Figure (cartoon, rainbow, N blue to C red):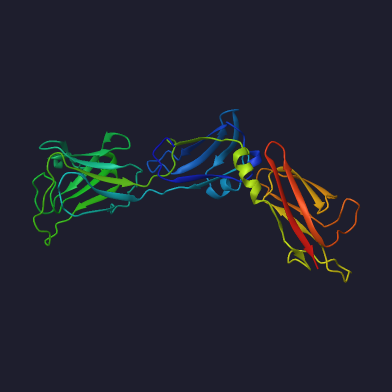
Length: 342
């Protein structure tokens, strides 16, 4: 992930056999070009072959309904709200509150902010009335853009141009005369119960981090690998092959009843935990071949093959003990046995 967004995304493999090997996918976004930078559209592209798989309005539900080369994309986008804050550098212990500024002109900008204590004349606070602007001992920075920000400063207790208990800092954007937009209110509380308060000193940094939506600055990129069979794992899994039910007796719970019949219903056993491609041969204890089954499934279709208890001659097999031999090309073989009883 390249960019500023804090939202999450997931790539789910829905149809493994459709996943392309070595293909790189890129997901980009466009925002609404306002200061809030709300997510407006999304594009999904296979940059390995140039195909554009999706290009349209950003809607998490609509995108998640689509399948691209066996893949499903899920997004959990963030809205811009305060995520965390605190003194990143320094020993200041003044309690701080950060919330939305009280203004009808507020814009929650998706930018992390730092208040950096520098010293006298570090910057000049903003005021719509130019003659009421005065120097202060700190600067306000957008660390997301790596640029200084304008800010308004309220000192209701001590008007000393120094950030102290009881002061409020309001980062603003689009400042031009009386036209400006508030963002956040950062209030350094004057707590009478605080023993030995330590005020900010030069070098101290207060940090505000916010949640951010996907914007034009964000790019998601990943590369897929096609499904494949691990021969070592497949060989070790041969020992897990067995027949269910064993013994086969009366009517198993999954057998379908035969309509218009008073018989016992469908007769069936299942060979389970099979490799994707294999041949199953069933013998009597004397070595006579009873039935040959051919199992062929996708890599994730499940390793199960049913047998209806009908021999190669089309006859229902009799009760007794049977031997099965599973042969998987390039992997190995497994011999086992099962019983059919009254």
